[in-house]
Structure formats: structure tokens, C-alpha cells
Length: 265
Image (cartoon, rainbow, N blue to C red; front, side, top):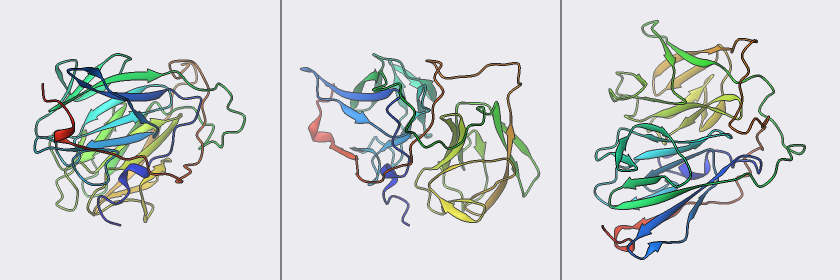
């Protein structure tokens, strides 16, 4: 599996009862037709295989990632060279709201958060019915160090700006993310060179359980799941109990944009 092959298709398609996202490129004439983001994690960058490919020298290969948890939508910069901006402020990790403007120069995109198409979850196959974890932690096998991942979207990689920075040349600079998707802790590989492995099997997107063994390149970690207190209620923005459909894998929804196709403002 190459580092860029089918990255856009690796995360599952969000269910109908989760909010959707539309990105509308802005030009001097106003707002163009929007790009519908239908997956739990979608990479934006200049490399082949990204969900939204922006061909420009200022765009990093894997520049940022949009994450739909099933209740909220986030943008996470992947330690890009030129940065990701939200409403004219440099953004590292931010929740997206309807009407926000993302800038990945020379492009600007207006964000539309789309209401769920349906509230019916009766025909959805779930990842599991456990309560959403309060937190996930990783114990590095080489050092025994335990890192609690406190952000909604946690970046693992070799760069110092990662939530877990692993100094190992087999680890890509932006290797994988860990987040909660429909009440399940999951890992998503960012098209890393040496892969993400779960219990010795290479994975692109997978649910995590306590004591799982995650491997980023040659760096091995044990998964620790911290469950919420039974006295604390947790849930998505709309209070729904959500379950995930199996990824259908029946279509490719990548968007490829060249710099000449957008007005530079």
C-alpha cells in the first residue's frame, strides 16, 4: 500500500443522522458550488490521494484534516509549512461552525454545517454501544512514558507540534490521528510511509480498545482507555445516540483543484 493510495476513501462515510459539511470556495464573484465532505476524516493537501487536493507550492502534501465525530466537526492542521487559517486567525485545532472561513492560501472556503438528513438510526450497524471514553492515553513501549491525549483530535507523528511526538525515523512527520467517532475511540492513518498497525495488522481506520497494541512505523504503544464517570452524562451536540454504518467503499469522492482554477485574492 503506497503512502498516498486511496487516502480519501479510507475513513467511513458518515451516517445520515450525523451533521454534514460543505466547503464552498470563495472568489471575487461570490461563493462557488460547494464540495460535500462525507467521511469521518478527510485530508486536504497537495498530494495525490487527498480528499481535497490543492495543487500549489504553498500547500503541504498533507496540510490539514477535517474530522466529523458524528456530533461536531473539527479542523486540525498537520504541522503544515504555511499554516491553516480560520476566520483570518492561524488555526491548529478548532471546532468548525456554520459560516466559518478556512484559508489555505491561495484558497478560501466558506464552511456550511448541514443538518442531519434523518434521525432514524434503526438500520445502522454500530461500532459498539459503550459510552464515549473520557480520554485515551498511549504508553510508549520503548520508554514506558504515558501520554494522555486531551484534544478531540490528537496528532501522532515525528514533529514537535504533535500531541504525541515520537522521535523515530520510521514515524512520519504527521503519521496518524486519534479521535472519538460516534462514541468510539478510533485511529486514522494519514497516509504514512510505514503504516499504522493495530495488534500486528495494518489499518487505515480502526476502533481502539483497552490494551490494544498500536504501532506507528516501528514505534509501539499500548492503548489505555479512560472511561467517563457514571455520574457524568456525555453526548453529542444534538443529544442523539449515534451509531456508525460500515464504510461502503463504493465510490471515490476526491476533489482535485489546480491553482489556476481559483481567484487569488
